[in-house]
Picture 1 (cartoon, rainbow, N blue to C red):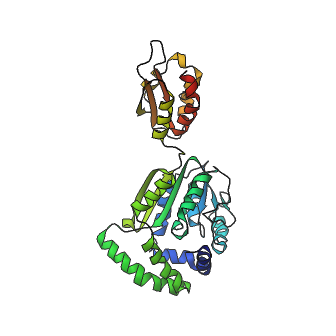
Picture 2: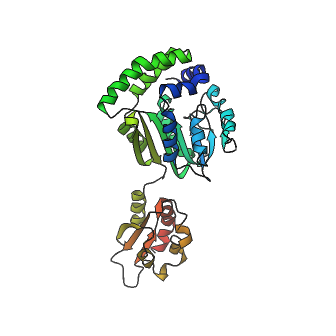
Picture 3: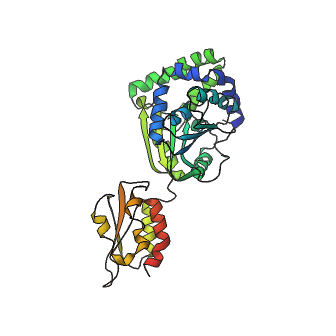
Length: 327
C-alpha cells in the first residue's frame, strides 16, 4: 500500500493498538517479543535501531536485555505512545524515540547500529528492496537484522484454522474494538500476499544479507528471520586473497581455540600476520568459533609456509596486506 494510506490506517487505531495485539493473539505476542529480542542478540553495549517500532513493545523487549535502542516509526501517532511506556518500565534511559522515519529512507548515518529489528512492519513497506538496502547501509559490518512477521502456518490443521480465524473472526473483533473494520480487513489480506518463509529468506539473500535463517513460531503463524551484514562473504574473501597469491592456497576451517593454529605461523611472518592471532584479539573477534587457516603449498624452499586469518572482517584486513606478504 502507499505510505500515506499506511500512516492514516495506523494513526486511526493507535490508541487501541496494544489492546488489540494482546486480545487478537491470545496473549502470545508477549512470547513473540521475547523470542525476537533473544534472536537479535541484544545485550549491554550494543546499539539497536527498531524500525516500525509502533508503540514500543519491541523496543522494550530489546532494552530489557540491556541494549541501547533507537525506537522509530513511520506513524507519529504510534511512536508518541512509546515514551510513557518506557518510563513506566524504567527503561527510558536505554530507549530513545526518534523522529518519524520511513524504512525506505532512514535518517541515520552509515554503519551506526549493531543490530536492526523490524516487527510486523516489513509487510507494510511499499518497496522492500529499498528498505533492505537501507538496513544494510545503517548496520555496522557484522550487524544483525532481525525480522518478526506474520507468515504461513506450516501445520495443515493449524493453517486451515488460522485462515478461518483471520478472515472471519479477526476483522470483526478488530473492527469492534478499534472502530475501524477496514484496518482489520487489510491485515489478513496483507498476510496472504506476503512472501512465504523461504521466499522472504531468498529476498534477504538477494539483497546482500548473509547467514540468512528463519524460525517458525506458533506453528508458523509468525516467523523470525535473521541475516548478517558482512559486506562480502567469507568464501568471496578467501577467493580474493587466493587470487593475489603466486602460490596455490588451501583453506581450512578449524576451531578458534585449537593450539595447532598458532604453530602454522613462522617467525618470518612477523607482526604483520601475528596481529591477526594474538591471544587478546582472539577474545574480541566477532565469530569466536572459527579460524580460517590458509596453508601455502608448493612454495620455493625457504618461503613462508603458512598464514592465518579469522572472521570476515579480519580477512578484509588481511587482504589489504596480503599483496605485500606475497612479494
